Length: 193
Image (cartoon, one colour):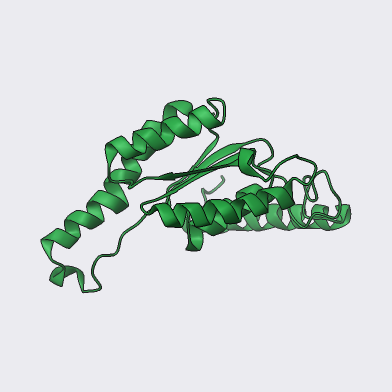
């Protein structure tokens, strides 16, 4: 005569199992003396893992802030290519120059200035033609390969309570923050491996 655990008891058991699994993984990592199996990558002096070794990524809205930080980290972690975009050509040029330096530092054995690892394009993500051109340029530069897509673009045209937001601002929020992200994901999906 066994009783079935309540939903609350089941949730508690699942949480406990997850915590135990995480604790065992942390203990194994500590015993191994590192951050995990790919801790230092090819160079034991590298402070970065090489989780993106050989992979190609698109990061939209990546010429400043979080997007640029993501692009930097992808390169530091071994990405074979990172394609970035922004609406302004000057911002793209500045980001590409910075990212070339990051690529050189991450790949000191590679010849050149880091250019083979970087693509920068002017692209407003709400514009279908510009998105298509950005994707085509990325695929052309990196041999048809695409492994990751970071949808970082967002607009915040108004700082007001939702009920006080003008319809034009709501349209822009939808167009940039939601619609373009869904469309770009759908356009890139056939190429993602």
